[in-house]
Picture 1 (tube, helix red, strand yellow):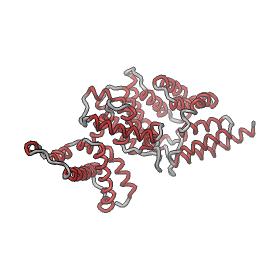
Picture 2 (cartoon, rainbow, N blue to C red; picture 1 turned 120 degrees about the horizontal axis):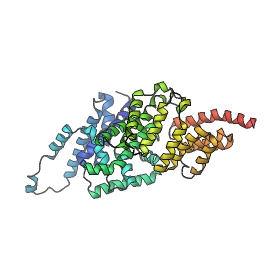
Picture 3 (cartoon, one colour; picture 1 turned 90 degrees about the horizontal axis):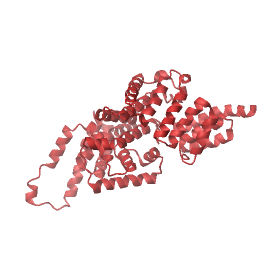
Picture 4 (tube, rainbow, N blue to C red; picture 1 turned 120 degrees about the vertical axis):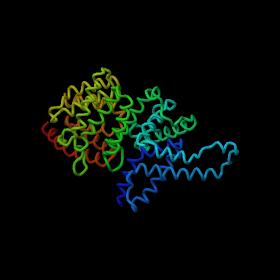
Length: 421
């Protein structure tokens, strides 16, 4: 196996399970991260020669655990031994650890780890930043993009969260039912951020990271198993399924972005759509609307449309109004502006978009949409400024190429409109 790209992909996919297991064994964030990194280095050395293991996560856990145990032994040489009476009462710690590894269902350890990262002793922003770093291995830059925050602030959040976990001696055991219910919102938000990073990557060459989408959906299924009557978790899973259903049609053969209205809908995953719509219907019967349910209902309307012209944009706009009331944010308003554009035209949509400029000045999609609306209204020069800004903020090559194609297509239409005027 000489495909280094495949190995890197396998390491990224195995990280959540491996980190969760190593952290459970060593009860130390830094030691678990060091053990995982050492295991990755050994994988990069061994796998090209010997081929990939049958279960990469299990291999990384085993190798990482042994590497960390070696480090513990080295540290112990410089530590004074306890008295004989204390030593005589100790079990074989290493044997117990090996037994836990052999018996552990490490694929589900990750859910336990998420609830630990979302401990109430940590502020909400630190909870999610720590979980994204430890559980999913997102870089500081990727997390900053998810938060629409600067990298330095995110790095400080993660450092403080690690310190607080260590100082507070937070247990690495599975939280009880009451604690799980308390932390449910933070865990759901973290899962959705992981999904979003996979759905639209914040960096790197790949615009879509399918393994992150799949992992987020798997985690949501586990969460729904814990909370089978919680409509918001049904909505979360439905939202991810309905969006991920479009993945096969979102990029063309050259890896370039295909707009929703131009996608080949026959490529959409019909099983995901059927499951997602069923979950939306089930959640709505609880009559407890929440943000995930509303977003899932919007995605369901797109999935129901056999062709772009069949999309009920007026109903989508109403749902975004409801979402604005429940969860006001400039990004929600930006999305509502798209629906307004489709239902009522570019002028009222631009009226919604313009006041968002200060809060979304560093947001790629703001400038992309603003440019499209300005071009639609025949304001070509202003549109080009917005498009240039969007390109400067593009996080992947696919985003930058998409905007350039958008400029080429709309510039022709816009110039004709200005000449006619």
